[in-house]
Image (cartoon, rainbow, N blue to C red; front, top):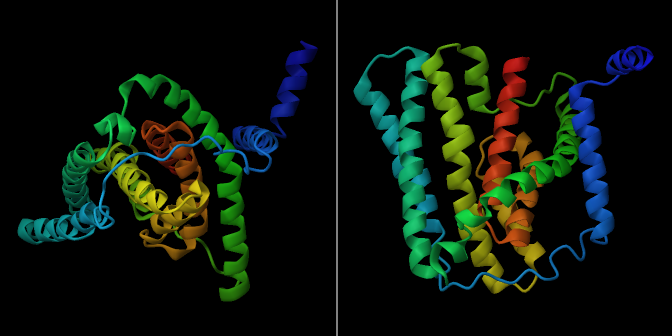
Length: 281
């Protein structure tokens, strides 16, 4: 009974978020020690053999940012007057379909240009069980860095724009918190947790990071550059530092494991956890 009472008293001081953060700090500190502050983390990371031309990553990027975005606009125009949640639901349906088509294009190009085809690209189903477990550990380790970037961004935002400055939520998070319609919420979850991470990891890690790595001898440099590209394609500038920290973790996971499933799982878990936190609030 004394042990139970002590545990209850302890939970009054520590929330689940605190436990997750402390666990992440332990994981991150352990990784920094084992890798000499990251210097030895990618010593034995071989490049992925491919014959991609330098312009190839821009093909699916153009398809995603161009025709797919125009298709979403055209669908709403053809649908006529809709309620706001219905318009957003239609947007998400079109974006999901466009993301799947773009991901299919990436797979086709990867099969044609990577040695060992999709396995060389990082899509080997035999590694899925290891990648899921590693994704949890990787996300815990990067979580303190993401939170630190949010705190730093908020601090400088208030310093520059005043105490009223607040970081805006991602648009999809705003939608899921403002609208309770089930079809819209399902479409948001499918887009942000399932379809989006698959497309973005194939594009930014699989294509851009691999292409940059082919021209550079240092894998960390290719991770930094591709992470910067990943952050800057997102609309909210104040999100860039936190997204950059997350992207570095995603890029490292890809280089270290050689598997695209690992950053896909990390990305999906991160987006899923933010949705859960948003709904809980």
